[in-house]
Structures are given as C-alpha cells and as structure tokens.
Image 1 (cartoon, rainbow over the protein chains, first blue to last red):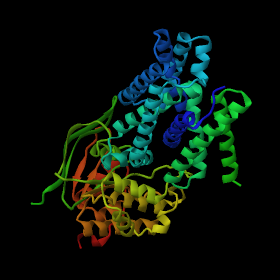
Image 2: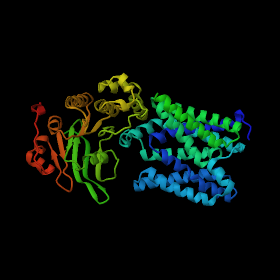
Image 3: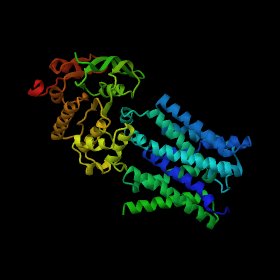
Length: 255
Length: 237
C-alpha cells in the first residue's frame, strides 16, 4: 500500500476541489446521470494509449476533449439534448474502450490505481486542477444565469453555446484528473455525489460551491486514509465515504 | 420624426417544415410601446426569441446602435430547492454586464422588492415576487429596450395592474422602448402606442395604432372567434 504523506495528498485534494466545483453545475443542470456516462469516454483513449505504449492518462484526456467537443457540436447542429447525446455516445465509448483494454489494465482504468504519478504528471495535474477551479469560479455568474434561462443569458450578452463548450471541456478535464486515482467509473461519482449533498446544505450558490468542494476533499482524504488502514482499493473507498457524507447531509438537512 | 429603436423586415422563422413566422414587418420608435397579440401558437414568443437571437431566422432585424436589451420571459419553471438567492441572481447580472454593485439595490428599489426578500432562495418567491425579480434582472445594466413576454402570467388582477403601472412608470423615468406580449387586450389598448397582431399559419399580420388593430373585425379574423374587451378611456390622455 502506498505511504500517505502531505505530498501524496496534494494532488487528490486539488482534484477534489475541482470535482466539487464542476459537480455543482452538473447537478444544477440536471446532468447527474449524463455526467457519469461522460466519464466513460476516457476508456477508448486509455485503451489506444496503452496499445501504443503511451501514458494512459494522456490518452484519456485526448479522448475526453475530443468526445466532449463532438457532443457539443452535435447538440448545436441537431438540437438533441446534451444528456441524450452523452448517454448514447459515451455508452458506445465504454463498449469500445472495454474491447481495447483488457484484464488488469481494464480494472485500473475503471476503478483507478494507487500507483504514484510521476513528477511531470503531478505538476501537470496540479496545474490543470487550478485551471478548472479558476475557470469555474470565473464563469459561475454566467453559468448561473444560463441555468435559470438561456434566453435571459443571451440578452445579458452571454455566448451560451461557447459557455456550454467551455463547461463540457472543463468537465472532461476534471474527469481526466481523477483517471489514475479513481478510474473512469468512479471519477464521475466524485464529481456528482459531493455536489448533490451540497445542494441540500447550501442556501446560496456560494454556499453550495463551498460545501461541494469541502465534502469532496473530506471524502478523498478520509477515503485515502481508510483505504490504507483497511487494505482496500482507494477509489471505491473514497466514493463510499462520499456516499456516507451524502446521506448524513440529507438526514441533517431534513431533521 | 422619431428614430426607430427596432426595424423588422421580412422576418420568417421555420422549424423544419413548420412555419412559425412568415414575412413579419414592423418598426418601433425609440421610447415607444409595441404590444404583440395573437392567439396561442401564432408565434409571439418565437418573434421575441428571434429578436434576441435565440432562434435562426430569415429577413432583417435592425436594432438601433447602442441598444441594450432587458428581457422578462414568460413564467419560468424553476426547481423549488434551487440554492440560488435573488441577490445571487442579480449580482450575477451585475458582474456579467459590468454594472456596479449599487445597481442591484437600485433595481430592487425600482421594482419595489425588499432586499431582505431578495436574500431568500428564488424557489421560495411567489409568482408576483418572481416576476418583479425578473424585471429587476432586466433593469440591471441600464437597458434601452425592455421585452416582456406575458409579464403578468400567473399574477392576480391587482398585481397585474400594479405591475403594468410599474412598467409604465419605469418607461417614463428611464425613457425605455417597450415590447410586450399580452393576452390582456384592455391593458394593451391602455398602454401600447402600436399593436402587432399575429395570426399564425400564413394568415394576415396586422400592425398599427390600437384603435386600428383592436377592431372587432380584425380580432375576429386573427383569433377566428369574436372577442370583446373593455377599452379604458385614458389611452390618449
């Protein structure tokens, strides 16, 4: 089992803050199930990268960026809702990815691995986490107006289509951040569960964003330590802790 | 001659084979009030969506230079537990339109909405309160034109008259151009300078002063049913 030190926790914590913030808008946009499916698109990229002997995370990032851009373009060409396109496109991606990846590699791609990333990957991931946090916080006002009404957003001078693309790309990047740690199946859950809990706990947008980031960090930290103590997989433990936090929050809010 | 705030010529909107609007033509002078009326499905909301660039269209839409649009949509269906306060919503508009924070308080005062009420989640607002919040949102960023899509839908009669009085007062205070969709023909007669009556399905479009458009013959032709309304006497006052 990997030794836990402040350095090894820095990246998961940065990733968790990004996941919590991005997740808030996924929950508010009712993309909960679509978000889970969206993370699957990384799988074919991972499969191709492994087949070519490349870094699998790089393959996952490439597939996510490509996939989200295709979904965005299809949505604006066909006017089919995002969730329907994501559901179809990314379920297909999961099927293709499963064929391209096999055995131990498939399990790691789906559920993550506790191997430490190299220095370059760590620095790049920290930079990407910071980028996601900055983009979401800067775009939060535009995202919130668009959430209430796309027409109101247009009259406020917001380029709704461009904002959709930026959000999907940021979402894809956040999934990519958790590929090594949580895998494609579980990263979608770290994006959604803390944000879903924060929705019940926050009384304002700022409150929801703060709760989501905090819960994601707590789930990741507690999950990492618990997994080390109980000798179980880190990714599944993080999501189990997040789910427990969700139910505690639900009971607390409605008690 | 008053300059036009908006000129529309040959406007058409199609959704596949369905023609929502066909060859619509009208103009609105700066500071004027245009009411858009017509039966359900005649394309009133589609017209507004075309004007704000939300749907692709044929023909020409020319807004005067420097136009800033404030839009109050038809009743929005929001989730009751949305963690978003009225103040969150208005501050978001202030940031996006680069308006000073003081504009939030100003907009709330203009629509008679208490700041304490605006600090509550928007899911807890009543229909009338939410319409006022939308109006405050539209007023942020100092618009020159306001578009109202059935601004009083879901509001009771006293509230409806109050909201129209407020709209009128704001128009006079700010020199705004108003475009409004309404089913309340008596209020249209009272408040509008010009009326655009859409009929849908390639049927005629009537445009002109209320006393020319709101005639029993034209209304029967547009609505395909006889309509009656009580015209207030103060239209020309």
